[in-house]
Length: 223
Length: 117
Ligand code: SF4
Ligand code: SF4
Image (cartoon, rainbow over all chains, first blue to last red; front, side, top):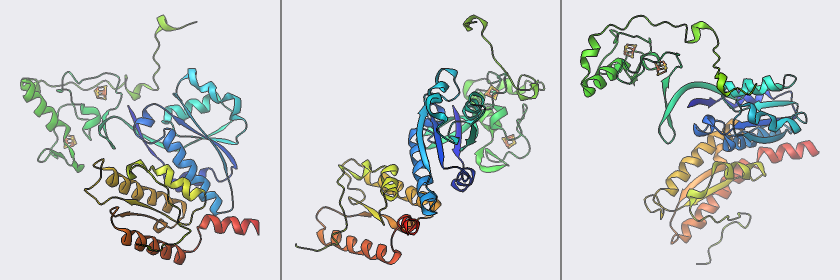
């Protein structure tokens, strides 16, 4: 799932400074699961904003609304009947949802309340960890199911580097060295011979280097 | 026991402090209370095992939110006591009331008064 953090409160407060009526828009998908921008976080931010503004004698009217998915044409129209009653939208979706809302309502100011950070997993309640960077050409079959792109600080394809020490990455002593994990897993799988295979330089075009990506399934299209 | 505690303290009953949500706490402050505290069972004695531990964590988190907003976090506290500790209940109520008195009314109330005046 996509994982994000709510922006610091001060930053959000500053963004909404010019407005008296805002629509605070959450999303019920990934950003709800990582407890950053779901219905509850919308409630908390609304409450904080109302208190901070009331304290300064600058009351603010906030409509709280949470869409099933903010990144999907099927749901984005739900705010159409009332969006114009508000001067700006503060979106608590991931970067994709925030942009999709802005795209659909071009004359509306749409502000981000979330710093979108990574594609990851829930390790335990309240703890999320990065796993994938959407590189467009997965190599997990070569690397024991551990991603060298997202989990190695240098995205090395033939690691580890000289900074790997006691299983930890030189970038941060709390971070596992991805290549240690890869070697360990290959051992567990009885595939350590694969470690001898040289993995050629990656073609980064299917990744971000080829520019923004679009996916089309012609058979599914209605037009 | 006939112990006294300040009459302006309103008690909201919950089945377990584990039921207390961050939003419940924030909404109280939004409504203009000067202070609030959560009175949970002794640690290790929760009937639902961890309700009071979770409540404490939420209170700590809600305090950081209040601080962000500019409301003194000391206006919100968590206490642990057992149902048999009537004297402690009264002492906590008095202690909290004293603390809130020294802090004065909630900044939200002060702002509203200034706005109206
Ligand atoms: S190799 Fe690419 S697609 Fe596969 S997990 Fe890593 S970043 Fe994601
Ligand atoms: S120590 Fe390991 S994870 Fe860190 S940069 Fe080097 S190979 Fe990558």
